[in-house]
Every structure is written in structure tokens, then in C-alpha cells.
Image (cartoon, rainbow over the protein chains, first blue to last red):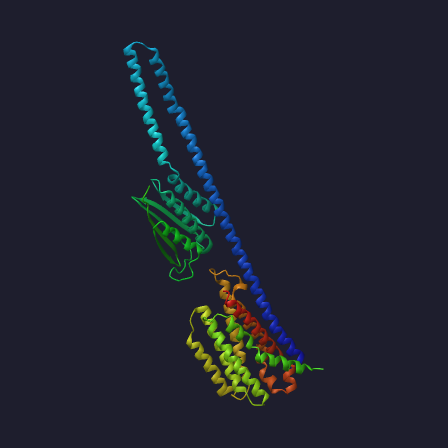
Length: 259
Length: 214
């Protein structure tokens, strides 16, 4: 074989390998870019959802304020005005049985007034932020994820009484983290979230049908997983994770002491 | 004025001692954990074997048995490296098959005192296959999104692939090259092997340096 052929073959072999490496680098970078774009979309969705939740919360508070103002004006204000009329009449009357009749009326109105104030106070207490906030926020989050078309979410929130605000906030963050994990890594099509409050026990069950991960393998647990664990620890709860190639299930059990 | 033969001879000599670069980088900066430990040890052994071949060549002694040994050590080191990298364990039967192949070639095909171009060629094909399997695995891995510049394994693989591609043709034509007259030997394909070996050592040195930053 001539030197020229040796040279051509040797050079071609090296150029071919260089090209293979370059093509691989290009494909890999393209894959990274696509993943980064998907991450960005998910982050944006989560951020948008957080803003929407905050807005919904503010809107809820606003509605509640309006309702209290209307209640004070229409009901308690009306009763107070009637009380004032009877009081003025009582001061003008000189006949004893007339005064007594008016006093009787004022007594009844005072009792009604007292009942109305108690009722309003009770309603305010049960409609505290932590009570309707968590349910509403998680329902909104699930709805937004459903609307995004990336994941089908089924949310069942059975919380009849208000939950401690710290627990509510941490549970919401955990749920956000769980959704983020599913969207980013699990490649799942469906997920289900269930939150229940029985006696003092808050239970969160989250499932997805993604590819799962090896929960026993150290190093695989990323930042999201660590965040969930640290929030559960903070609340003094228990986290159980079961993952297989058919999906992942998280069970979080927390005792709510001061509702 | 230096002839092409002188240039190739100089590059060839540099190539023979260039293992000192990855060896030094590994000793000073490189990770001493699996799978880099085995690769680092290979470079130590390789350096001394090549030094021996250089000295014996200068003394005009037949040093072909050293090349038989070197071929086996190299392919086994690369095989062990990728086994640990891809599967976390070494399949011993693979090492056994490589030993059988090299010993069989030395006993029955290309005798111990001749150049083992056949096993070198197969080794290069095997290294290219391992490198491409590694590429495929990291491309398909949906859990690890570390950029390529932060992956010492990727850099090391590039080093091995460049070396194997550059050497494949040389070894493929090895018998013809070595059977030719001396002038022919230095004027043709051997040049690619020496250059790709130097490139490999430089690239793997960078890979070893990165292992500390991983």
C-alpha cells in the first residue's frame, strides 16, 4: 500500500472518531437544553401557581372582610339602631308600665345582639386562614397542573376543621415539592393526592405512576427529597416512601396538636 | 535538516514516555477511588513497561514480549474501568476471556517474539465499543444531567476513543508495517499511533485532574 493511502486511511479513522465525538457532544447538549427548558416551564408553572394561590388567599380574605362588614352593618347595626330607638322612647315615657315594656324590648334586642356577635365571632374563628387556605391552595395547585396538560391530578382533600398554620404551610410546600419531583423526574402521566384529618392525625398520601427510583440507594435522593424529609422532621411527622418501576407512593403522617 | 523519519522517531520516543503525564496528574490530583484507582495503577505499570521497551529498543534487543504484555494490561485496565463505571462491578469472566485471547495469540498465531498486531487490533475495536457503550449509557440516563465538561469519565473516554481510532489502523496494518523495511515503518501509519497516544495521555490527564473536582 502506498504512503498516501496509509495517510488517508489513518487520517479518516481519526476524523471519523472526532466527528462521532462532536456529534455525541451536540446531541447530549441538545438533550440538556431540552431538559433545562422543561425544568424552566415547570418552575414557571409552580411560581405562577404560587402567585395565584396567594392571590386567591387575598381574595378570600377580602370577601370575608366584606361579609363581616355587611353582617355588622345589616344585622348588628340594625339591632343597635333599634336599641337606640327603644332607649330614646324609654327616656321620654313617664308611665311605669310603658317604660317596663320598652325595657323588656331592649332586653330582648340586647340578647339578640349578644347572640349575633357570638355567631359572627364563631364564624370568624372557624373560617381562619389555616382552615380554608390549605384546601383551597392545594385544589388550585392541582387544577393548575391539570390545566397544564403535563399531569393528570386527582386531589381529595378531606379537612373539616382548621389545621395549625405551620402544618398547613409545610404541607403545602411538601405537596409542591412532590408535584415538582413527579413533573421533573418521574415521567408520570397520573398522580393522586389525598389529605385527611381524623382526630388529631393529618395524613397525606401521594401517588404517581412514574418510573420510580431506588429509595434505598444513597445519593439518588436529591434536594427535593431532602426538603420533604426535613419538613416532615420539623413537624415531628413520619415519612414513608415506596418506589418501584410502576410508580412512587409517599405517606406522611403528622399529629396536629393545637388546632 | 531533519527527515520525516527523524520527526516520527522523536514523536514515537515522546509517546513512549508520555504516560508520565497522566501518571503524575493522577498521583498528585486524581481520585484514588474506584474506578480511577485501577486506571492510575495501570498508568504506573504501563510507564515502566514502555520505559523497558525504549531501553531494549536502544540496545537492539527483541522486546516484543513486552508489547504482548502491554496489550493485555491495557485492554484489561480499560475493561475493568468501564465495568466499574457502568455496572459497579467487574465481570471476571471478561478478564479471563481477554487473558485467553492474548495468551492464545502469543502461543498459536503471532508468536511471543513477533508483533501482536492481531490482538492490538481487536483490543482497539473492543476499546472503541466500550467507549461508544458508555456514550450510549450517559445519553440514555434520565437521572443524571451533569454537563459533559464536569464528567471526568467522559473526558477519559474521549481520550481512549481518540487513541483507539488513531491506533486501530496502525495495528490493523501492523504486520505489513513491521514486515517492511525500516524506512517504510517510520514513514507510514505508525505516526498516527504515536500522535494519538500522546493526545490520549494529555486528555486523560485532564480527566484525572477533573476527578478531584467532581
